[in-house]
Structures are given as structure tokens and as C-alpha cells.
Image: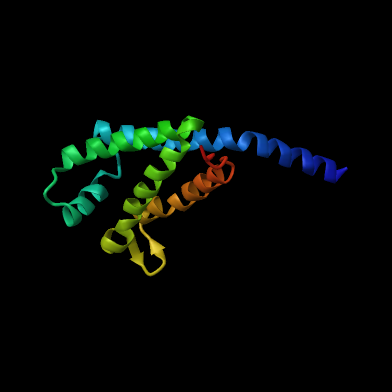
Length: 146
């Protein structure tokens, strides 16, 4: 009996995973991107500090607006199954930039070794986003040769 219930739950999870993963990635990316576009993101000070140390020739206002738009586009691409490859490529670039403060801004991201600040925790939670994106990639069909 337990095996039947277990199999049923696992099959249900397999069926809902693609929708749940796409929807959750969309919500996170679109929402957080919109906050940046509106200038209300709690991540703005961290982004500003990183921008000053990596690309000081850009203004924060223009960068954060376009960065927010990029995040919204990533979210939309995750929501639409046919655009998941595009989402994945954009996601890789985004993840590379989001982990940079852990190395480049340690005063803002670490209280002490292995003890992240709230900003550091905000960044480290992206490991869960990465696992979700990998899960989506694992169920994609390979491109066909033409």
C-alpha cells in the first residue's frame, strides 16, 4: 500500500514539476526585475556597490533599469517552454553576475567566514534557483539535426 501511495505522489510531482518550476522562476525573476525597474529593490545598494567596482563608467539609474528589464525577460522566457533555452543562456550570465559580490564585496556579504550577511544569504539562495533551472533543463528535448 505504501508503495502505491509513494508511486502516486512521485508521478504527480513529475507531472507538476515543469509548470511549478517555470512559474516559480517566472515569479521570482519578473517580480525582482520589476522592483529594480521601479527603483524599489532592496538589492539596489548591493548592485550599486558592485557596479561602482566593476563598471564605474555606467550610471546606476540606467544600469538598474536595464538590469531589471533583463530579469523580467528571463522570467518571461522561463514561463514559455519554447523559450527555455534562451532563458537558460540568460540565466547563466545572470548567475555569474549575482555571485560576484560574494568575492568582490566581502564586507557587504560576509559577517565572518561561512557566516553570510542578509545580502549574502540573498545571493546564496540562488543555488536553489540553479537547481530548479537544472531540473527544467533535464527534461528538455535535445535539438534535432536538420
